[in-house]
Structure formats: structure tokens, C-alpha cells
Amino acid sequence: MGAVALQGRVVRLRAVEPDDVETMYRWENDPEVWRVSGTLAPFSRHALMQFVEEQRYDLYRTRQLRLIIENPEGKAVGTLDLFEFDPLNRRAGVGILVYDASQRGRGYASDALEALRGYAREVLGLHQLWCNVGADNEASLRLFDRAGFVRTGCKRDWTLTPEGFRNELILQLIMD
Image (cartoon, rainbow, N blue to C red; front, side):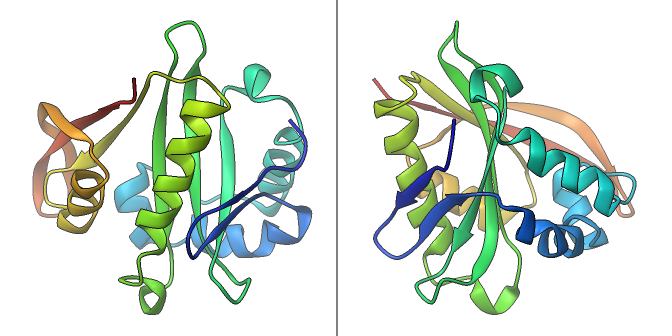
């Protein structure tokens, strides 16, 4: 797919680079992130280097795309992922992370999601984006609600947390 660069109103989305491995290593190995990503084990630097290397291949081959979210100063503040890309049914899952709490609440996630929406519809020809969000993740639910995603289902007692089982909501955005 080559270098992808997408510009929102305030953020820039760009392809992952080898220099991002250390940052992704820190983010991916934070147990707080594991709660929302479904991760159960740490990532090695080697695995992340392989992931970055695979990102050079076409989305149609890998079925996933990770973009780095950069703030207006050009600092990497998070990631936006397309996954389970399904060109036949013209849909993909979306996941988003703004890692540093000091960078949250500035509109970066909503701007990144809006830029992705245009790219998904206009460049990839997708009909639908979808995501799964923990029913107790109020910030993510607000983000996706504001972006036009509709809550279409609930997986009851889906995720085991230290506090007990939690529901997970299914959200969809139909784009045409």
C-alpha cells in the first residue's frame, strides 16, 4: 500500500515506521491497554518489528492496517487500526487508542476517526465500519456515538475483568 498519510483537521494519520517500534512496545505492553484490547501477553520488540515489516504489504493481503495518530506538533499520540478487513462485504473493524492521558480530550480521536471514515469510504470503497466496545467504556462509547456509529447489539457477560464479567457492545457505521 505504500506510505499512507491522511490529514484531519488537527491530527495526521500516517503509516507505521520502524522508528515506531519502541513507542508501540511501550503502549502494547501496558496492562491498562490490555483491558480494552483483549491482549493477554506482552509483545516482544521482535514481534512488533515483524508487524511493522508486514505493514508494507497491501491491505488486501494483510487484512489489517495500523496508522499512527500524530498531534499538531508531530508527536505520535496513538494508533488507529483497521482489522478484519473484508473487501467482499466492504467492511472492516476499527480500533483506536490515544495512549497518553494528557493527550486525551483534545479531539484527536474524533478527528482521526473522521479522517479514517473518509479514507475508508472514498479510497477503500467500504460500506461499513464496526467496533466492539466494553459497555463500561464511556469515553469510547461517546466517541463512536458522536462519530455516527449505532449500537446494534450486546454480547452479555462477554469479557472477564477483575471486577467480574462485563458486557460488550457492537457498534456499526453504515457509510452509503
